[in-house]
Image (tube, rainbow, N blue to C red; front, side):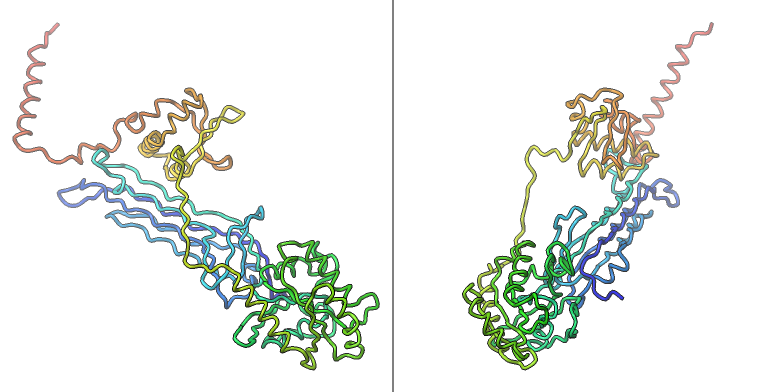
Length: 479
């Protein structure tokens, strides 16, 4: 049964915004009291949050589909819909978020670090919010915007200061068990470590973490053995420790050749591992002939520039010297890192000539409009309502879409698509669109919603109507 998962594909869906409401206030003796439709609620976001109590992505391996709740629709009497509830997904410290193409979207390190994996949709405006001096009684409301649908890949990269690397059964698990309080599985057969193990080591005033991860074999950088499943977990470590077995029973292996193989795999994998500070640990010197082999290979290793430590995890030999040497390297690495004084806010203003949309003529003659605003406005429009369509036309005209279509060579009757190829609204363009809602009869200007006229004005209007009728009667000539 799988108990540890460090890579999953997650399918997240944010909540959609609630639709706005088109309503007219009614009460006794005042049947048309004005628009009072409320706004729709915002859809919930899907948020990834680092939680240090979580150590695996197992939950998302079993349940990869996650969805936030939708916003509620608005209602009459100016009642706005309830916002959808955000869906918070805890992830381990060191989780990297990537898209399907492998591009890094976020690197989540540190308790409480958050990333919005899918943005909830906006709620639609009700007709009360759409009312203005020119549009006193809108007979429509805006639809809610659908929430984001996104496929992301989560990869866990262990956050540790020191990584123990070496062949299977080199004694890495035994070493971390005596240097720290970690209790990894220890056995006398290869690949007993199938998941990363973390331990906390205290050496004087320095406290650091050490990782025991699955062993390497030749070809690991290409995925052989546990391969990439291991190497991913040493990318963040500041110090690498080669744990070499001086008591191996395999005739074709020795500490120096083991070191060469591991170094070749680290270089092949890349990710900066070839430049990390290194120590060499000759382990199992308590085993017969182990000390003799350590004495034999140590001069060769030191000649290559390595600091070499002879230890025995079983007999607890050489552990103190090793832990303080690691603390020295970790401290030097931490001191060299730039200090983050405060959170920086990066502002990227739009170019002065950025219209917020583009118009492209495609090979088949179709004109495609792309941009956040026009695409969102299309999704918010109820195309069964002529008034809402007119309102959309006005918005597009004010944004400059009409002018850009003309510049691009669009003519009456040409096809225009707004949105991506798989989800676009296509219509035959007419330049008279620039008239917008007025083309359909000055929408939203209901005379019933106008303020009452004074009594004297009403009398004068009635008298003018009687005079006009009398004049028509006097001018009438019978056959």
